[in-house]
Amino acid sequence: MTRRVRTSGLAVCLSACFGFAPAVAQEAPVAEPPAQAETTEAESAKATDTEPAPAEEAKVAEEPAYVRVHEINGKPDALQTATVQFVGQPGTKYDGAIVDLVGVVHIGQDEYYTELKEQLSKYDSVLYELVAPDGTRIRPEDLEKRRSILASVQTGMKDMLNLEYQLEKIDYMAENFRHADMSPDEFVEDLEKRGDSIWKMVARMLGAGIASQAKTGGDAGLIMAMFSGEDRPKNMKRAMARQLVDIELVTAGMDDANGENTLIKGRNRKAFEILKEELDAGKENVAVFYGAGHLPDMADRLENEFGMKSTQTTWANAWDLTRN
Image (cartoon, rainbow, N blue to C red; front, side):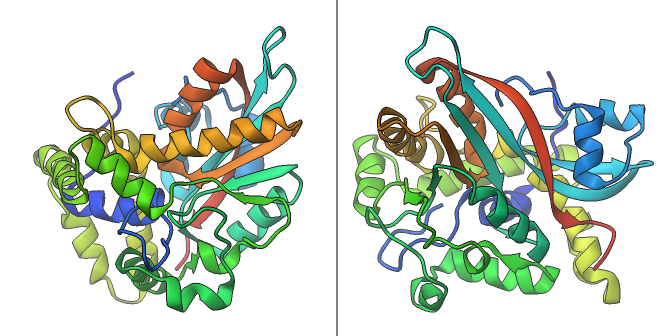
């Protein structure tokens, strides 16, 4: 399916802030679909408390599988993230096991994170992302010491948009949470063994943004939103939400000549080593709680390596696009 390309150079960088990497440990380097699972009208209405029009459903179906801009009567209503449930198929090793890919944007509404906390409390195990030494736990009081340059950008943007910061709202000390990401040393080692670097990745991402800029007219809408007076938070959220749904473009821009990258695919491999451990230990209801940009590759891994199929999709409102 051909999707519209909307991401510009500035938006590529902002997408990295919102969709791909939460804060990393202070000593770490700065880092951070399956076939569209069918979402019924009832499910979509539940996510927004409004019955979508048929034309709206057709438009939504063109969006990537884990993050979308939901519209009502042609107007943006919410930036939404998906939870897609996968179930082990009969005759496979993980027959009947459930793995939910829980997509998240790292800056969102307070009520969004409240709902996510309630959802995540119900799993046997929640595997979470953080480029940090194995087993790292994040306490709210540790955030000031752990913020990287990227996290500082996220914090500034959350204030500008009247939103909240994920690491300040999710309880990473919960008993069912398990760190499932690379350590800083593993991250650097994965880059070096492929002859890659953070700066090369950034250059590829910017190249992808520049390539799309001619098609989208650049960042004029986002820049105008920055200077739109008292409605600036709402207008900026609307402008940025449209950019964030183009995860595939940003992800493709990260790949090296062999179609590999550390930021998404390398970290996903490590996360799924932990997932295998949890499933082999008998866990039957597991969540993989990662930025939405990681999940298309994870979905492929669940289908191809774990013999699982997606069964349902539910949506949560991360940003209300009707208010400041």
